[in-house]
Length: 182
Image (cartoon, rainbow, N blue to C red):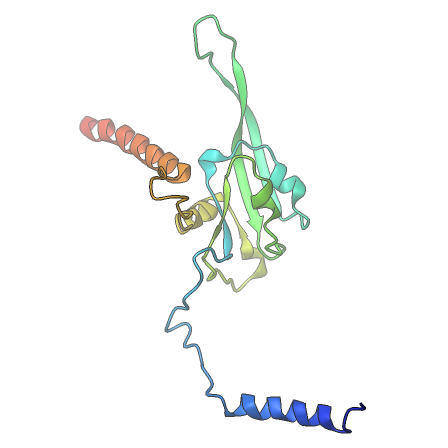
């Protein structure tokens, strides 16, 4: 059976008329913040304590928008009679968000969970050169990363939060003796 001439046009006009009669909804952003899904991809946050400067993220990035600089430092032996070790120390970690295509490959390839998606999306700049964010800004965004959902009610605390808490406690302990000296 052959289609009736003009039936496609009639169907298209019907869709248009249905859409025109629906009430429009306008988001009042920036006065009202949008309700975003919990695991929204906004910007990339850096958990610096987990970064071993392995450079996998920079090598795998298809846009080459991750810049990492480091140096080697000698660590004394852990036990008497042991040998000295060398470790990489992170000097610079920056992401150029004017080049980034938000694919998430860097986050997926990081073997030490140092990179995470943050739901922050308000980081516009008036100059494109200011879209290269250094590790301090990336660290600030890390604290906006939502905790991963627990696998079960008896699951232990996420290792990211435990490591951040230990670091904060260590910094607080170092600050307390200094306050007593003054």
